Length: 136
Image (cartoon, rainbow, N blue to C red; front, side, top):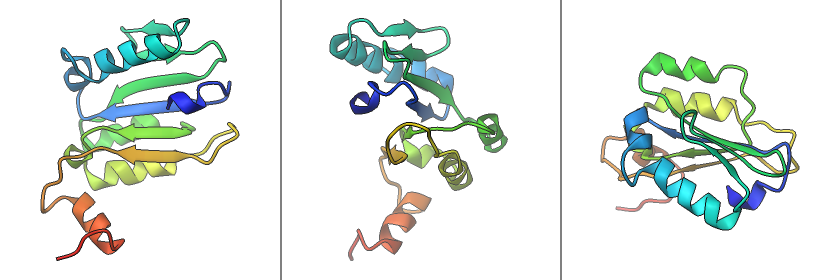
């Protein structure tokens, strides 16, 4: 997401299934805090709200989506970039809902990246197979 933080309108969101997964030692919050401080020393880090505010006004927020209905917490959001960390832990309906939030006033095409440790019966494998990325 660092490639976009020069744009004031940029809003990025990193999602994990639970907050302890985000805030755990060496987890997403620790890793991103260190990386962002190194790349942009003047970034404002707000650990209590899991937010990063860059000098341009760009923002990156971390949040959880534990239960299926938690997806509705994203209602009305406009997200330029999503990172769904450990996507196999999310429900397909949650990720599809995130896709519906992908719109932005920033000068970029919205993007989603999903990290995963694939499980055979996971929706992600089915998506990749349907797209022709997997063979026998």
